[in-house]
Length: 304
Image 1 (tube, one colour):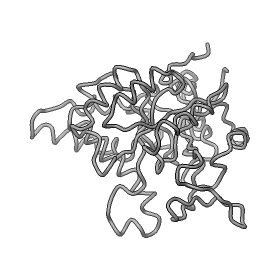
Image 2 (cartoon, helix red, strand yellow):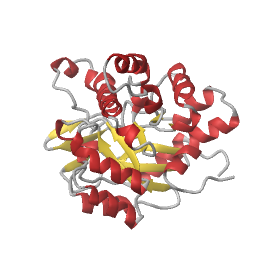
Image 3 (tube, helix red, strand yellow):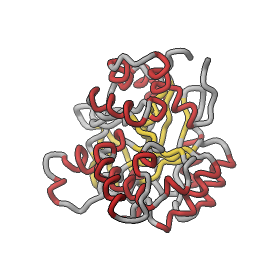
């Protein structure tokens, strides 16, 4: 698979969990969740064969599927079985668990069909450095689980975010920023340095705030090494700007950046490999971002 691409940020819907997908007269997907229409999905969301056809057109060889974030935590056992049924030569999958029952994660990893989990950035309104999730993070490190942190799309009760699509363009990455900063400040990355955590949307504004976060630790205890902690995260490439992406590579290192598209949503990247190739990185770094890093986090063989 030399030159292969692995998209680590692809959403699917498992039918029958309260979300239904229809298509309008213009061929656009309409997702109904509790009667509320979600019109941000533009492409196939359910049928795996059609999803893979979309990936062919996008120039993607392999995908890591995970639940639509609104379905995280719903009927976890049944949803995980359905996600595991997708696994094949071109598909790996992340499941969903109750973060306050880490035994679910241990069992999921012991089962071996799924390679980790997707979790919301603000589960139940809490953020991920909260003490209630301490056992989850311990289990995630012990099992080597790939943990993908994704914003919930409604992480803040700010009415202005309902205007101008700001809930998506600003709210989503800011929610990820807050929860990642919370993890850093709470010492999660210090206590569990071997965690395999991927932040959606390039980590939001976290890289840009590293100086402020680090300065705060010079004036308040315990004086954590903030930059080192932030660099323990992995981030995806869904930033829509080559200069921003280059900054992520420079700060995190190419070994911490994973190709992602946020398929099938309108704020996703339809041809995600192009922005990576536009950077003209050394071949080893480009290959790491396009496929090697994802395969490593999934615990799968990296082609020679």
